[in-house]
Image (tube, rainbow, N blue to C red; front, side, top):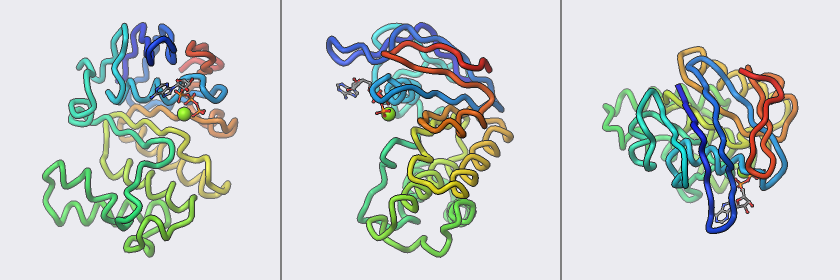
Length: 215
Ligand SMILES: Nc1ncnc2c1ncn2[C@@H]1O[C@H](COP(=O)(O)OP(=O)(O)OP(=O)(O)O)[C@@H](O)[C@H]1O
Ligand SMILES: [Mg+2]
């Protein structure tokens, strides 16, 4: 369960997220859309503990999110806009890093990575360097890395922006499957078809959040 209570995020004088409140229960997918610069990424970063909140509070399953390491330890997974992959490592190495940090056994890590790469249709590309992959393939690696972490919360920031329609469907199905196993999912998107596929749809504009369709 994600609980965002009266959250404001500011960069100096610039208020990126203005007094935003909502909840996303386990099993639900929320889409957040709105113009460029509206504050969607900043909202996701706040939930991920990647940017400090100026006022208000983010809780995940009742635990207050204060910083990125603790948020990650609580199972808050961020699939960042721009993918956040290490370009000179292979796809497989990119997937393994957060899993090895969890000290999972090697065989389990290998199995989870194979499953995640297969689920995005990139098993054969696992040993390619990220910089050798196309933009859409890189985006699918980032999604695979996100879902491989089996988070309680998954924050997908424009994770379908470079995909053709069949891969977009595939990624939406994967995020839905994550919700079905009990994750709370938030997707920031400019794509109306992605917003329609979600359980709820919120709109951000100049940091403020309004509902198109409530969860
Ligand atoms: N690290 C930062 N330092 C200063 N200002 C920032 C920083 N990150 C974002 N901003 C500003 O905060 C506002 C919200 O940015 P944000 O990235 O959250 O928007 P967005 O809705 O995700 O936009 P887009 O659709 O382009 O991804 C913008 O005015 C942006 O310039
Ligand atoms: Mg953004």
